Image 1 (tube, rainbow, N blue to C red):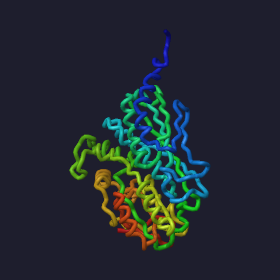
Image 2: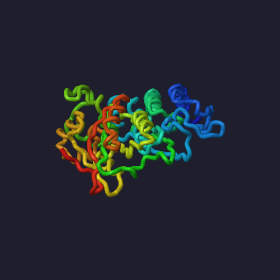
Image 3: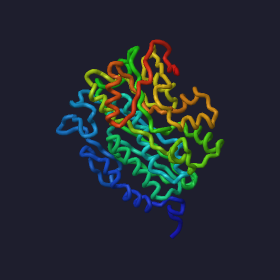
Length: 361
């Protein structure tokens, strides 16, 4: 019969099996605003109902119709954290990470997530591994309150190492222009509230792998007493998604403009990310003792003999998001976040002066 596509490393039948296997997980993220397109080449999500823009099930950030809607987009990946998934054979948590990294960027201006798209590229990866990844993506979309509207599966023989893959994600949300959170209302003396992270999130893993796996020669299946779990379990802890808790706070304070700025603490840490949300003539003073530092960061710093300033610039150090709020609202917002299952702390203040983060003990 001659040479077939499968002989070159691409199995079309496996793709059909994959689509069937993920169908229920993907559809579990769909609400009535998703327009069914059987065998379509793209996905559709309706914003209009009877000719009127309406909040809909995923646009719950506002209690009224949009007057001047703005679409918001973000994209990200998982980075070399995938190397930990390859080594352990655990793949569903990195799918969750993929969504979290884009959604947590998306919500920093107050946007409500609408839908998510994923891109999965691989060389000779079993279908079940791919299914595990997508099921993790779907679970994260449900938690974020957005639809998994579609994606792309690219089989690339010889491009990656056998058994390895890469992930990219794309999120779209919506916000009323008048409700955008831009940082313009930040004032000196405002409180900086930090929301606890689940751990490392999905950045800094090149340094993590060098320090823990290469230099210290720790095993991923090794139980680490100070972590209370194996190293692999800690390093694959999924990134927390903050969309629903933050929206609950924003909805409550929408008239009072209680949330004035939001930062996602990823690459660049507290050093680089917090100032991005502040006006140019304002800076942040953050107290390092204001929150408990998860033990994984102490382990990395000790074994790598890493300077503390470098730690705070590479890693989130236990703070996943920061929000700038009027000081009179800070404790009430922390209590509201606690009711949403999020630990939060007043970790600093906005001050006049250089446009940077100052860390103090």
